[in-house]
Length: 161
Figure 1: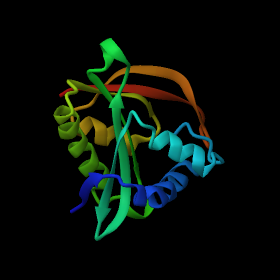
Figure 2: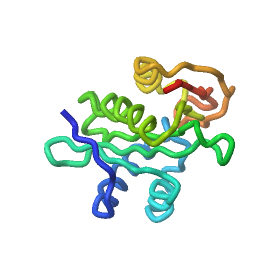
Figure 3: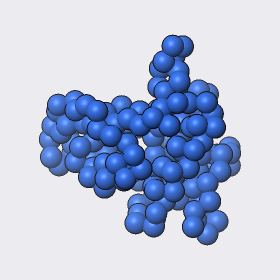
Figure 4: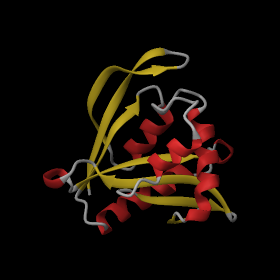
């Protein structure tokens, strides 16, 4: 069973390793696989985000963040992003982080969660998010330049908390 906790400064190197591995495929995240470490860590740990890590047997194997999807009058809707180390795929880490994040978002005062950009061909993620109550509320045609598949749709997903 994964343990989820707030990320600490000491987690940055492991989080970078996870990010680097996940974006290297060019098939699930919009980030260029050549994005420098400093740029990615500045983005992932930016001040407006609540950043977490998932540990399995004492090792950081996943990370996610929560933040307001929009400022001011839209700040009651949460946005989130998740990454699981490829070596931990299939071990329930994504589900654990997703379920935890729904509760945490509510604790932080959010009333809904929205994912702005889920690559449609990332069927494992789409199924996972649907299984925890996220609904596809829109499709952005050809929004992602998939490394193998070319132009691919992306979904907007939403759930009330």
